[in-house]
Amino acid sequence: MKFHISPSPLHPYFLDFKISFVCKTDDTLIKLPLWRPGRYQVQTFAKNIRNIGAESNGKAFKVRNVSRNTWSVLGSKEGDEIILHYEYYARHQDAGGTWVSNDFWLINGIGCGMLPEGLDQEEIDVIIDFPVNFEVATAAIKKADSYHFSNFEEWTETPFMAGSKMHHQSFVMEDSTFHIWLHGNIQPDWTQIVTDFKKFTQVQLDIFGGFPHSEFHYLCLIPSFRHYHGVEHPTSTVITLGPATDFNDTTFYENLLGISSHELFHVWNIKGIRPKELKPYPLFEEVYFDTGYVAEGVTTYFGDEILYRSGAYSKEQYKNELNKLLTRHFENQGRYALSVADSSLELWTDGYEKGIPARKTSIYVKGAVAALILDSMIKTKFDDQKSLDDVMKLMWERFGENSLGYTSEDYKAIAEEVFEASLDEYFNNVIFGTDLLEDKVQEALHHLGWETEVNFPKEALAKYYGLKVDTKGIIVDTAARKTSQDLVEGDKIISINDIVGSVDSYQKMASQNDVLKVIYERDSQIFTKELYKKKELYFAKINVT
Image 1 (cartoon, rainbow, N blue to C red):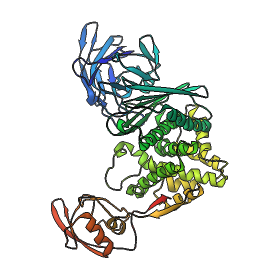
Image 2 (cartoon, rainbow, N blue to C red; image 1 turned 180 degrees about the horizontal axis):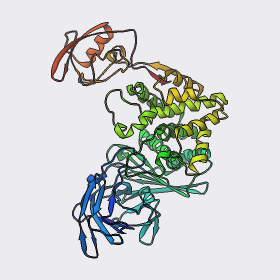
Image 3 (cartoon, one colour; image 1 turned 90 degrees about the vertical axis):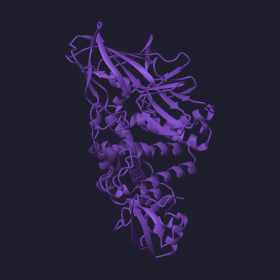
Image 4 (cartoon, rainbow, N blue to C red; image 1 turned 90 degrees about the horizontal axis):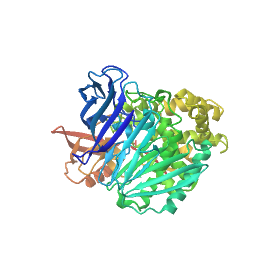
């Protein structure tokens, strides 16, 4: 099978695709992936395709859509040599999409490459007509004028970044070469960047006993606008981080290290250590798994912890990251409603958006908090002679290196093997339950050497009445554990105690009064409610001091 990708002569944001193949069936079907690894949510890539058609030896075939990601080449016969052609709108502006501009191209085959029926294991050659002034960064193997892939999954897992403003540096560790590609209007300090990348890379190699590939490519696109996104692949990662004008700022650099460490850890944890349900990737249908707390949660925890352990982050920098994590966890009212395992199963429903009030927790955030707790439990019991490192090393040896899929039961069994005791309480309460984690988090942080304090919002409406209000007086969040939801998200405060004022004045009244007469608007109607200050304080958050 051969792909030929070229710029459209008609529109600067379209790419022209031609796919040459031999039909395996009559009226052969052509499929486009329904989702992409790393984001477990239906992606309507098909909306980017126009003018799809096919031909064979001068004979044209009608290509008809038969489902949201499937087409049929009507009239085609088994053995026909087909050329499928279509235009693809390449403006999916994140690390997982295909995105072209005047000075760079980002090509992710997962969203733009179509697969003819029965050819998922056939070798693929891809020719890409990049602009002549572009330098190309990719982990793909080039043979003559084309890039060669052993099968469709390898093609979809090997992105390309090319452009006219490319910066490149590389380093070697334990017989593997790590390439750092940065594209944008920037001036990299390569000495600092390479030094810090080496630091966190070495720790990850130490955890797993070496790197599983001979090369790895960081494909970092630095756009002009604010952006933060990363997508993992076996031998590369795509990172989009902007704006370029902030490139030399401390926060920008911390983000670059943070996302890079996270994505490198994914080489082992999800690209190698993969849930059973994702072996192999069922790219053309939804797939449900409950181990997102391992795939993303453990990775999120280690991504920053390794930066601190390696010295790439200072103690203060890591403390700030811990507090960001804790804030995101404790401010998420959905942690009372849905376990982190069940939230993993519901990624396909609304896992990447806020959703309705207090519905779900985050596999990234609560998963990382759960990993912190388990790491502390192991370190405490074995006086730092064992840790979560040992769990992940065994996961790699038992499942990653052997290319076997794992389940929650497998992860629990290995954790218990390292812990040398039952972890039923931990898994029942932290992973599969919705128990409060305040005490466990404080205990874990103390065992890891951190001082903590419990903080409440400085805003009195939130602290005393469980209501978070924006600058316009609109309720944006409520404490899920309140016995009654007096005011709810979307309500707009008109006055408090018959005074129409600013939100700051409302906060002052909430601090000084035990009873508030609130007049508010809901669905274009006006209501009045008396709210009573209770002894309970809302929106408690643990903070590392």
